[in-house]
Image (cartoon, rainbow, N blue to C red; front, top):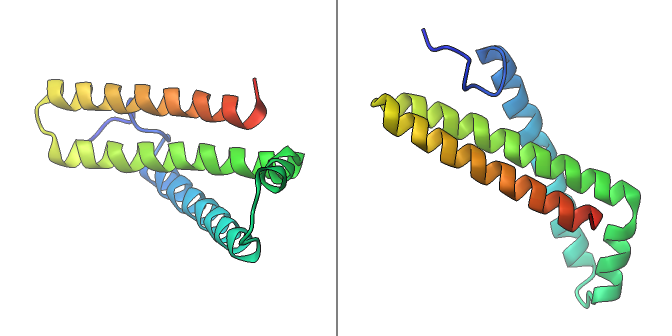
Length: 115
């Protein structure tokens, strides 16, 4: 039995649910962005800035950013536990992935909210 110490959620069911909800949020965000870019072919900085100045868009983007982190962590944790059998290699891989996800998330929040 695999322990949940390094898992994102408390059980396989919660990991499965987070994976599905995060995928849905990412899909909706991606479709929105593609449609927005297609509807605004002559997009300039002022329009882009206006879009991301809205609090609702910042919250939507933050949801997508956090969903990307959760989705990535669960997926890479599952892959590492399935395919990286030596404990040290798996531990190092998970630590590097966790650190990179933390850095990218903090960086994304800084970009999004201008902190």
